[in-house]
Image (tube, rainbow, N blue to C red):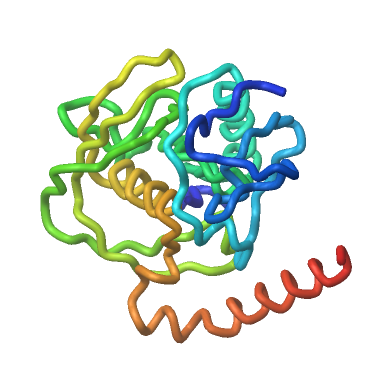
Length: 225
């Protein structure tokens, strides 16, 4: 999610991947979820309509590889002026995202349901629950959808339960932009984009930009084949 204020390691997938006798992914297997050694330095933000952005990500197990990827994702998030980044956005079908919603005059990291964070955080296998408050409309952007934004309605507060990079399961209540960021990133883990959530008028407004992204992606991949 964009910042609105900005101008041969053990596979984390474990049992979720099977291989055929030739070493290729087995039938029905998510190819992005197979055992891999990830070089964090090679990770970059994937753009729509990369198919991985539409895949439902897999539950993962915390490993040193996952920690290294999360650290690199935090770097990428900052480099791109984002406040959140999900693993599918860097080409990995893992249930992992990172976020950093900084404090401001309108946001605080204090209280029972903070609207900001003091430091960047990683959320492994996150689960959202207990949405609360009114549905609030807010214009969201996305690092995988450059130059596209739209109004999305989301609950003003929500609880997240996840595993941190220290291996400890935690639950937090958030509100405002922090709660919205969590919901936006968990959507990514389920293959849902703001294109699916934004109001109809914004879908129409962004049709040209969406077509441009599709055309560029098709051309780029044609050159690679």
